[in-house]
Image (cartoon, rainbow, N blue to C red; front, side):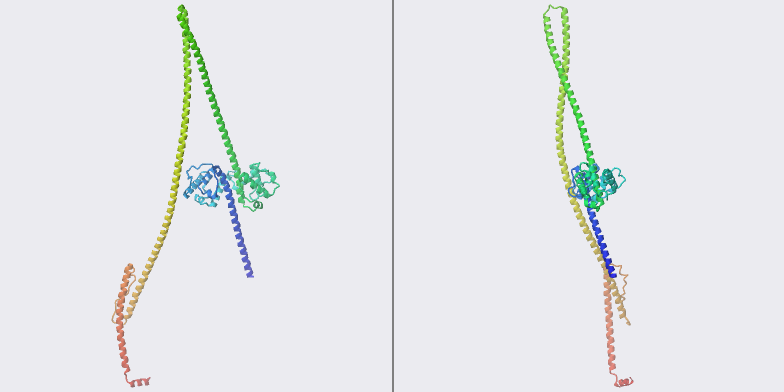
Length: 565
């Protein structure tokens, strides 16, 4: 029973482990799919913003936002403001990429985005951290797109989107928006939004009798074709309810972006048309004013010509009259028979004619002078116009030359900047290499110092050991000396040594002192040993003499002693 219970428990643990592993795998697959959905969605959104700059994401989303320029264009279009700070137009080095990206992020703060919502640093974006980039773009999308929904200021992203979809799909049969988990599964909500966007795209009533899969697939295709919304969802998953709700939220938010972009395009088109109409009206007014001025000038010139013609006719008439009067005067002067009264009358008439002639000549002179002044003025104006044209051409030429020179200088400076950046990069690499070498040398130095320290410790340990051994040897010698001096009438010099009296000395002094002491004590010990050997020899000779004497004793004594025994 115990064996069966243990086996069952093991199987249960194994099954639970397998279940946990499968759960982790499923979660990993969902996370990967959610990441792909975000990449598609935000790539589409970024491209709609960059299209205004004739730009687009050519490789990957993280590559584009790491080049130091795409993020500047994107944020300028997103905020509809110009980055005033100077940034590198051709960044190549890492430091230039990080500087441009940092300026763009700081610019976002001045446009109303709080620092806590900037979830990625310049270094992380340049290092192509995809997870942080997606979070950063989602924050921007909520702030600058979804937050603009009217009436959604105090609502969450999901609530604001649902409120907008309800408003857009209001009145469409079969559409009831309550949440993201159930309200979009039939596909009718997507079809209603597409129909609201443009009623010429589809006929909504035709889809009531179609299957859910047909509705969803048609909605995805029509949205991609007409609204520019990429296909992010799978019709089977949406119909079966096995989808990631976050993907639906993001997909619906792209519909909102399409509506907003369409309204912006309409507004821009209306503004352009209004500006064009205003420009045309202004140009028409200017043309009409020029025409009126031209007509007025023509009328003035025509009046002057008529006046000159009249004056010419008057001048001709007066000249003929003057000739007639002159001939009459001549004839009168020849006729002496005329009376004095007639002469006076003729004289008066002649004075009147002369006065009239003088007045006419004065008027003619003034008219001619006015005409000459007018012609002179026209000539001056023509001359000034010609000079202005020449000046304009010269200015255009100078401007072109200066522009070419300026562009040349800019190009030279940019090349110089690139050269300096390359030199800086080389210096940075050299600096890094030197720092690496310095670290290696420091490591070697530290190892040498550790080794020297270890050797020094060993040296001191060895010194302590040698000192203790030598002192113990000295003490042993002293002990042997005492043993040799037992029951003797001589004594040697004491060789007892204390550790305290020598351990404060230097290593060389300790070694020399102890060596001398050992040699001296060894010599003294040798002297004692020799004396002891001499004594031992004397003792051995005495013992042998006693043995010889004992062997020569009488036999009778031996027998007696044996009997006694």
